[in-house]
Length: 293
Picture 1 (cartoon, rainbow, N blue to C red):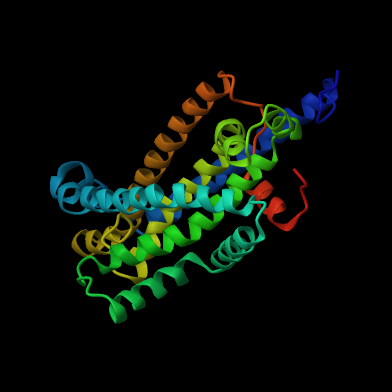
Picture 2 (picture 1 turned 30 degrees about the vertical axis):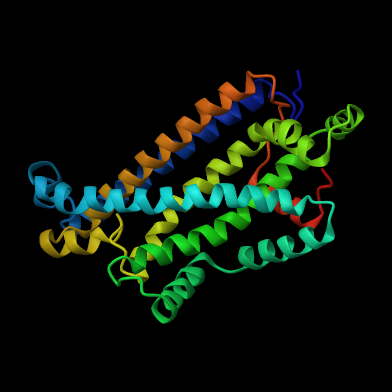
């Protein structure tokens, strides 16, 4: 028996796969044992480094929960601005008018090429020089500015790739019944492309949440990861604090991706789905012309 992508394994191949899996599990267990042994030798597994997260409510109310809320606030504001802006830019790149398509393309390629951290630093410097934004909220403004500019450019390519992934017959059918380009985009292409774009779009939203940590590292934003310094200074438990913070990031991003998976399933059961899926790599290929759509 074969599948579309590979030949189904036979009896010998199945045995080999089980052996490989067993060896991997053993090696992984040994690696974990070694890591825990080293941590134990360095007194990183002592109860006094971990129990404060259970017995000391102040760690949560003073540091972790406020930091998590700041991360969610920065990420949510950036998402609310970047998603519609990216959608408009993506549609602009598909315009038949060169005076729209070329400037939008230049904007997207420019901000996709600059590291998001550099955009945050530029944003902070610009707010210092040319605005009256208070120093208390300036890090938040700079982080949101960098996240919006970079991720809107990436989302624009995701939108463009999603639309180009649709069969050309969709556009031809819309033209045949007399729909204009704007109507075709709004009522035919975008609704069907949403499910194709959703996996890549959710991945980018997760990136937005994680990139807020850059603002905490260099701009002084009081987000979740930056709380590591204050907790470690008070409780001398850097490793334990980083583990707890990592688990919080995992929980938040898992909730986001789980909701997106549920939403994608609902959308794919509707009549607006074509079954196509666009990844971030596909969007990059569309941008360079390697995927004709």
